[in-house]
Length: 467
Image (cartoon, rainbow, N blue to C red):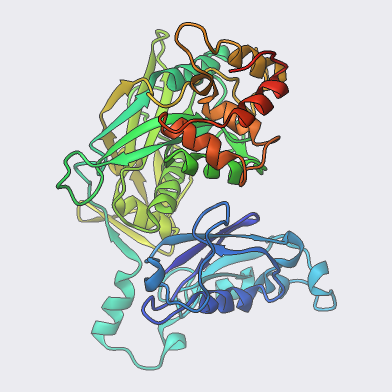
């Protein structure tokens, strides 16, 4: 099985594990083969915030990890030099002094199916007689092969591309104030700047008797720090987010979780739905949410503008086969953003023929959209991480929002129940001591909020009087 390890310095792969017997210690040992000096700031965990640590002694299957599952950790970047890369550099340098550039290096699949970096001249020699491009020759893997062995080996790198007719998510409901605010910010730049955010909400079952959720309800949108970069395939560069753990923790306290992602892009010609980079990113996020190549109603929502100025909002899922191909790193960006390139190590069979590319639309499943207004949250506080916006998060905005308490039927908790306001407050209040009580009062309005918290927050906002 394959485990993907997302770190603050990139994505690592650990392959060839048996989920029934392998443990997290085995994962760490495989990482140490190529990165022997890595220092972990946060251990391997189930969540991006690294709050739910994995047990190093339990097997992977006991911790619900499957092929393609994503785990997370934080590492010291200065300790992550790959010794495969280092081998191409001067051996006189200390490990911490070895350049991390991969110039002159190529990706290669070794006999265990793991992808590693080796010197280009080594790859060229192996490719001349390799079983597949970038792989060792058959005899270098083992001396004797049967036809069954060969077919089994070859099938690991071959995908018969098939369209998935129906999405796992049968419907997504978007909070009107949240989607409207995101759309209006994009309109400020005439949709010429790409931007993305994460959708927080709930997965729900259509019927009580259903085994799995099939509908998604979006209650809030959070836009992490990012930079616009038209030179990248995605059109933006995600930045390190110091609030990542707080956002996920606040969502969890409110009974919410990450249920999808949203992005906006410039107008495109008819038929050009998602770019290859967007398909791959959607698959990676879907894999992360599902914990592997599993069914999940995680959605991708895109907002754009047509040539006549009409704004459109559409929702999709990528197919499970797309998830599997991205998990194996079989799909890549290429010169044509309308298609995904197939990595040279792999083979895609489409309509009985080998294909070097797959049209992006082939991987997409349309998800119907409905709208609602959240009964738990409002969405009036300024958004974080935006530049050139009319409003920014500050105490004056906090005062402006909370002073409407007592007017038009609003209570103090009603005005406090804003996902973005809560994120702002997390900079000043204790996330572990204060927020469970605040979020409990928001999540269940029958639970009263202590007057002490009202006074503290009122004082921060510069308000007088009691609530």
